[in-house]
Image (cartoon, rainbow, N blue to C red; front, side, top):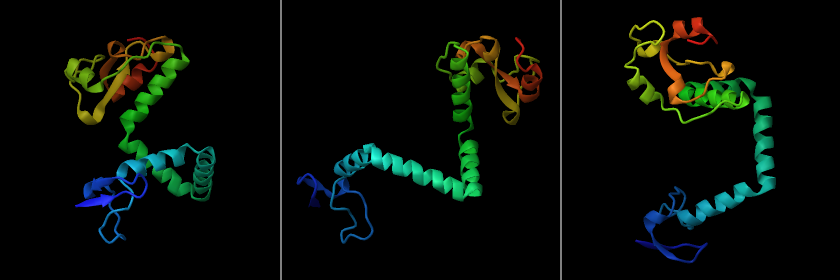
Length: 161
């Protein structure tokens, strides 16, 4: 079925229009490309960005428990992303080299064996350790990261292995 877009006046197939439960045919009158363009332009407007930031800040101030729950939920769903960001940030603060780190590659490379005690590691006890700590000038790259037990890594702290 073909439908006309009100924004760009072109005829497109029905699947090119976003779903909308209140419309008779179940689709919006503006195609997906026009909808995304409008949304992008809307979000680039400085007044809109400022009002969105203000709204979010006020919501966090009014609902501290919900805001904390949202942050913690995001943290537990994205732990590796969070840790990767922090490692990169700390390495850049110390003016160390920062490279692309692939944790799956490191786990396979080290065969799941702790580099400090040479014992196999369970998935729930797994941590990735900087051999030369970032605080001591070590790089944040595949070559400087190894697999370790949580206890071994915490005992080592910021010492060079």
